[in-house]
Length: 332
Ligand code: ST9
Ligand code: ZN
Ligand code: ZN
Image (tube, rainbow, N blue to C red; front, side, top):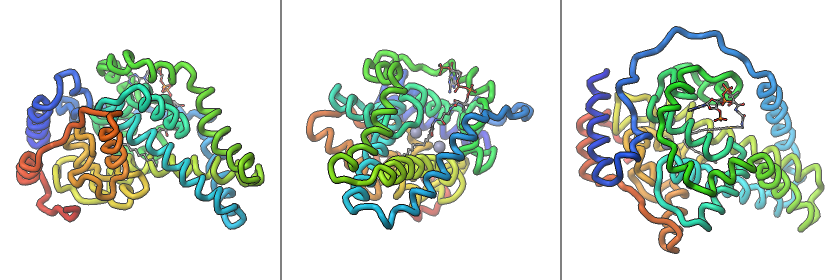
């Protein structure tokens, strides 16, 4: 109900202003957009994407059948690539560039390379869509509006033209911080080349060159299977974690706490918490628990490579849970 959203928005804003500047509020839910669904428009299919995504998934399944004949070192390498590319999304595009902690230039270069390994659109585009997802959550202006069903939120939104509201409302977002970030702009400029290098050349050629893996296995296992798995783990945050799980922090919104998603997405499944307190660098109340991304950011801070982590106090969390939560904090 709107009243709850209204309350939620007020509290979140008040909390945010104690820790961050007003300009950093573009990832906070905008209650004024609620309930203004326009008529459904005819979806315009993008056949190029449909064909490429289908081929990728067929290749990934074939890659899975090659796992028994894959060298042990190549399997380790596949997991390493999965984790690095995952961090490029979670610690990079998501927590740093969409929700803003601070990272030194060397860390930003590492995260941008890791981000290209994930091949999920360039950082600027990813963060613009993600800020839209928070600010206009589950309306037509949300690029992967989960009220349009599991498939649309999962991958369907990448296979059709965007709703005009996404582009219109998205223009209002403040993206000045990313425009001023040379690493982000450099990655956007050379995105395709960086993807060819990081998402395909490096994962495929390293096992072939260094320990004599067959090129076929290297192409299908650490190459395409790893890429498709990492995409689906990410997409589950948009689909499954908007549908299944508890809502201990705010029962009036759809995002939920989903342990399975947290595991595969390096700690990004505490999604009811994350939509309630989007500026919290840890995206969860519970620190390192099921959250390797928070451990990574903390390690970077202890090495002096990152700073300015925003965390919500236990008192504020508790007060919020009592006011808007479901009263069933099974995740606690
Ligand atoms: C992929 C992304 O997979 C996945 C993101 C998931 C997010 C998850 C979030 C959850 C939290 C984090 C959890 C992480 C867990 C990680 C675990 C890892 C183990 N605002 O897009 P275009 C404007 S990508 C403002 O072409 P169309 C803008 O001017 C997979 N403006 O629209 C833009 O031009 P430009 C690989 C906006 O034509 C212009 O419109 N990639 C906004 O409708 C045109 O934009 C693919 O599959 C906005 N929000 O096409 C490619 N949006 O950019 C998929 C647009 O030049 N993409 N504008 O400024 C496409 O092919 C197309 O975007 C399209 C729509 C066909 C989908
Ligand atoms: Zn979400
Ligand atoms: Zn977020």
